[in-house]
Image (tube, rainbow, N blue to C red; front, side, top):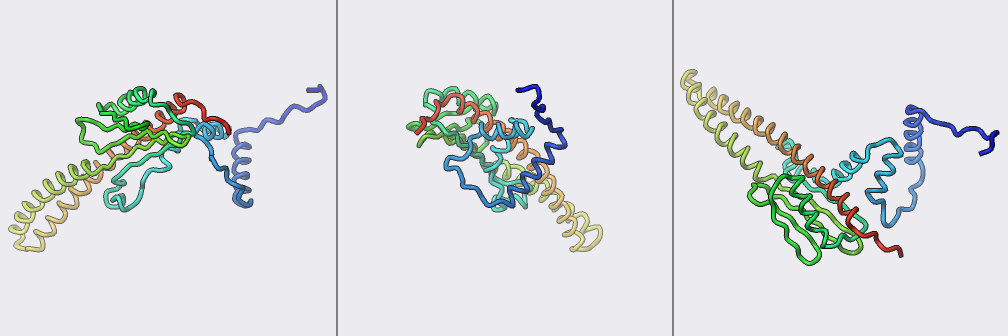
Length: 242
């Protein structure tokens, strides 16, 4: 650089935020650019995030949560959280079957659960053993990329909490309360109201417990997905260039 050349301008944090916000606004107004057939890999997204001052770990977690099933059909509205968790990653390279033992070790370590790994062809599927969780982790290399899928149905947890608390505590206490209050007040409606209050209270308790556990499992599986994605990227040979 010649001595007369001005030093490159440095932007403050506030100026960076303003520039990125304006660029995002201009992007909305601009015509859509042609899409890239292969898209961006997670590593590419991490680099974009780092340039914008976003932690790479948060980018990985956001990518894992992108495909989480949140439909109300899974009971999300009534139960406070979806009844199924689903995470999906795509790595633009095929991981070899020789890496499956290492991936199995990562899965069991992050979940702190013993499990059973099944290899069918070039695919790996892992299930927990001795734990009441309908959980599956699949690693499927094909067509030049590796797909990672993590799914868990929370129906055993839903049945245990709502069946046990609402059916047991709510029904039992509600019936007793209905009999006692109905006898004291001499009113059938008073007894039914007391039973209803007991059932609603027990349902709310079960719902609160379910939401806490479901969110904890959501975070656990999101963390597993991010770690598996990084491990597959590390172990898979680079895809051949056309």
